Length: 420
Ligand code: EPZ
Image 1 (cartoon, protein in one colour):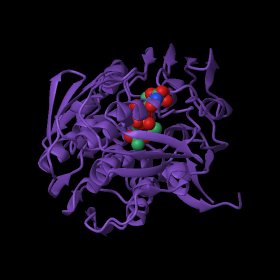
Image 2 (tube, protein in one colour):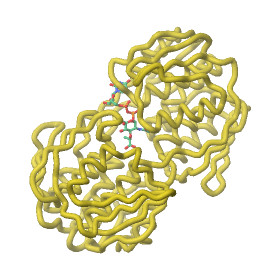
Image 3 (cartoon, protein in one colour):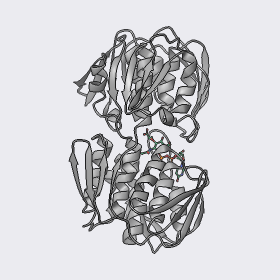
Image 4 (cartoon, helix red, strand yellow):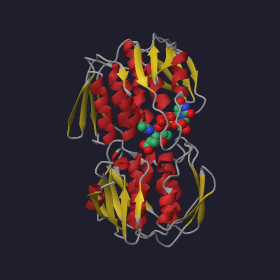
């Protein structure tokens, strides 16, 4: 097991390179199953979740080659359409192979993902959509066993789901006729998948916001695609600059994707200066000020930044209530922040009242999910003294060598081995 050992209080200055979004690269890797031609993805970090998806694609008979930040996937010799529990339980995005496998090969058997630390996360919306497209679906021994053929359908999602949008889109692009998805997700990562699919020859357009129209084509070709910048990695480094009163140039960062985040921290006097290839975030004269935050679908405040902003507001002036609306169990970082001296009261399963304190203190804490884990690292960067953040395998899922990026801009952080 590894942990981060962090000595807080160092101001961060310098350049951080923001890479392609984990949550965009994973669905596009799954989309590579839709074609027998090569799919070449640039700007990819070798995150541990990307490695899981690579192994999963290889288990189907696809080849995946990595060179620098480029992934080349060829699914021309797929000889298996079963996604086993080991992959899907490790990473929920593995479930997204269901749509493309079913659309291209007419059958797929994919393990049900089960719950996860941030919530129950059912897959009913995915399955209902595929059934409405004519799929015969049985649940057997913990697996979804699905058979085609698929036909076009008018589909209404009962709530917005990023993953169900990815999955239904990938099923519809090779399905004859025009499928319409109502209440579709509009996250930048969904837009990136659509851009890649269109370059592969898919016929997709927005009829209106949240309504996607997909007219199936008989085959898709290959693509070379640069994965969209990671807005949550960007937000993480903004908070890192803010809590240390530093100044960072986020190369490759996109301000246009994070307006909901910059809106809630502008009051703190943090200055953003756009450049052609990224932007500066300057918190050297900031007075951190808390405001209420409620998570919602894009373009609202992202659930993936909720824990990050909680850390920021735990040392800001004033009181604020943060409400998590997307997942029912995404407050696991709060007790650990409390142990570092944060005054945060859990009001109910979804809301917390944060009363800013003058400083946090280092101690040993434990990550229990990806973003909650990063929130603890950010707290440690600001805290007085030494913090050990344990179970950082959660963080490695979505941040490649976070400690090296932080160290390069002045943080005192190292990865250490721990017995448990
Ligand atoms: C994606 O998860 C992201 N994961 C999550 O990021 C992100 O938090 C989430 O979208 C919301 O933005 C990836 O892209 C790999 P959803 P996803 O389906 O698609 C409920 C991170 O930290 N729901 O939009 O699984 C669900 O339980 C991760 O990088 C159903 O009820 O999220 C949740 O409450 C964590 N039935 C809500 O919808 C369904 O069939 C939104 O989930 C599907 C979803």
